[in-house]
Amino acid sequence: MSIFERKLVRKVSLDDSYSLKASIINSETTQGHTEYVIKVKRNVLPENSWFVRRRYNDFLSLHHSLQPSGINLPLPPKKIIGNMNRNFIAERQIALQNYLDILLNHSLLSSQLVVKKFLDPHNYHAFRELGLPALTIGLRGEVDIKIVKQLPQTGTRLRKEYYLVKMKSDPKQELILSWLPFGPDNPHDPQQIVSLLKVLTTLQHVNVVTLVKAGVCNDGAWVVREIRKTGSLLDTICGITKSPWNEQALKKYANYELRKPVPPEKIIDIVSQILQALAFFHHKGIPYGHLHNGNIVYEEGLVKLLDIENGMVGVSYLYRPLLTRVKQITSMQSLDVYCLGLAMFEMATGIPFTSQKEDFTDVPEQLRPIIVSILSAKSGRSGLPTVADLLNIDLFRQAAATPQPHVRLTTSAKKDFGTCAAKTIERIKEDYSRYRQEKRVLKLYEYLDESEGQILLCYKKKSKHAGGEDDINGNIPLERSASPSSTNSNINTTLSALSGQVSVNLPTDSTSDRQALLGAICTFNKDSLRKTNRPHCV
Image (tube, rainbow, N blue to C red; front, side):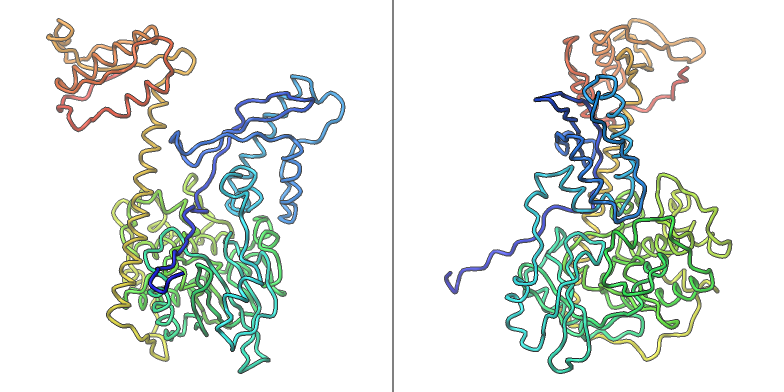
């Protein structure tokens, strides 16, 4: 390669945090066995969906791979005689669908590599970890680092790898090295990332784990830090006390029944110290965003935050499926506050928060108003509280951290940190827009009568279109289409009557697919409608 040629830097373009949805739409019998056709999608948009075929033995192999979790997943039993009976196949299809629903609704199980390969083989069939030999070659310039062994499946992040290392200057002290490939939110080249990592190694804060060394290799970033013998706060919640770094994450964290909440007094102490660290980050313009209980260490009454380098690498957030549904996240400050609320909920209840079912009854009374003000959809409409607002609460009011924190932050580094933050918030806003679009598409399905394919239309007739006048009481007449063909004509008439200028051409063929009808409705621009009195539909 020429010395003037710029090296191509690869980064992971696929976001592993996006949740998958799967529905078994059919079953086919071929060559003496049954295959189930599964439709998989990342959202309701057609371009993000695909089909996979799986036999029962494939489900069985997946089930065996998830056994270390200790969760009793309801996989239907194997049957040798009569397994080709149509009624049995239909019953098994329903049971397998229930199995997939439970699996994909579990945040940790759904993020496992075996599940990704099962449902998305196109993107994950060639997945390979970096491995010890490749990392050794990548670190050949770091003569003072000696790699002892790899720690497989230690963390919950799919592509992150951990290694036990020692420094030649102090061979008795064991350290941990973590390597992570550049993520989809990475806006910088490797040289800029190296500069930012060097800045983070100078960061000294009583509530932040100090980075011993950091660098870039193999299209990813690596950092060396001290091992925390007690593990993370998530290990404490899950009751893991012995050798937390040597156990498989699926075995440690998956079974929610084994978890225990943190006492309220300890939560108050932990959150108070976290707020001090977040206030320092926000003051210096250092983006974090990766606050969760797996990145919090609590030893002898002192909190230490981990993985402050993740924001520089551009990897996705653990809570991204929840963040994409919150309109109030418009800055790194609001992102950190919302992640803090999610971590507090998990500390207080022992289980992760789900936006589909907002239940705060198990949260202690002294913490409930604060958590509700952050996580509740109704409370969040007025905006999320800031770190300064939370520090002004008597529960979290503490003296300033000692010794005084500091970091060697240059002007160029501060600008690059700002670029990282802007890229992160921009992508969260894009995801929120997609989420809103999905909700609008799903809402359209509510207007469809699936049994008859009819749409109930409520509109105000105009004399130039219908040749009639409104009811004397101002009531607007209702019309219900009697067939798919009449539905199309009624929709065209309705939209023309409401807009006066906008014309939407929908398919007139009665045999056309209903998806085409929905697509035409989606393209209608409601901003061009004139304001009228809201009809009273019955």
